[in-house]
Length: 432
Ligand code: MN
Picture 1 (cartoon, protein in one colour):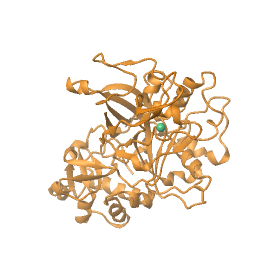
Picture 2 (cartoon, protein in one colour):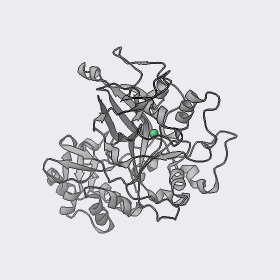
Picture 3 (cartoon, protein in one colour):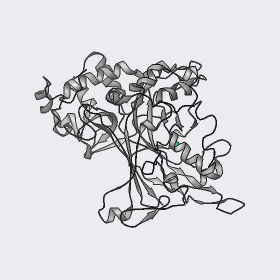
Picture 4 (cartoon, rainbow, N blue to C red):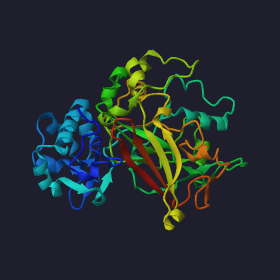
């Protein structure tokens, strides 16, 4: 498949688009004016309507079958079809939307029904999520946070043997743009002997990638690491909103509970493995002295090409900045290469005990911080546990999030000789 630099689309806004050029083609679920909720594909500043495309008989064979599944009001059935159906649909979409497409004139004549301006559309969660698991594979985050509690021994002994995770709450996953209500709960105030109840005082974000699970497995049948790629439907951005004061009091011994389950935001576009293929790279070498993963977690091909090179960014736009017409301020720039475990290792580990993964399950990677200042994916790390407030360009300071603060996550892939693609945005504004 030729997705090299010279391929352009007759959808003019796609050419040079920072997120959605012809080479990306992520899938999502949208509503537009009085059309029913349906699946579509982002191309430039438009959404290609899969139901309209099917009505016009634009697909054949496996691609038609895949487009039917992807055109529904949730993508679970499409995720369940797996990689070959997804690839067949992508091949057809590349063909149809290419500026040299033999069908170009016919498609342009129908563009009113085929292509909707994104600004007229509302995005929804792309699938019904059965289960949501949040990992902790960002090793610099684990070290930075561990150091706040255990300065001499930040990583616990299991960290380098298995991808740590906890079961999250699928029911409170929400799509980008959904306001986030400040939670209330129990916390132990500094110096207090007993907890008190009230609004969270240390509200934070976490910069993560989300992973959409594809076909999945039967109960009792682990997914081998070499097969894990077949079970990954795509990727998005994920903000694991965190109430740090609630978390500090509740997390021992079973991990986070109410400090995380009030909201988790996802970006609406599912970026496929095929779009990300040019941005694959080797998993960074483990530092000397680190253990070799156990057999079920090790695959040579995965080590050689199973990591992702995706630039990640966190921006903050406060209510006051918005009022004064200021641009969002960058809080961090990081990269998915800060993952100590690959996504395939996460899938293999999650299923090794026979746990069933299902189409539309979501994994969070864990906070993806870099090792240095300017690369931290949470305020907890940036402020060293709330000790050092950060200063914003207009003179405001923050230790944790305040009412009206909007957090914006973005992600971009760049590589010499390839067209850059992006993930769109994952936004959420704090209410209360
Ligand atoms: Mn997290």
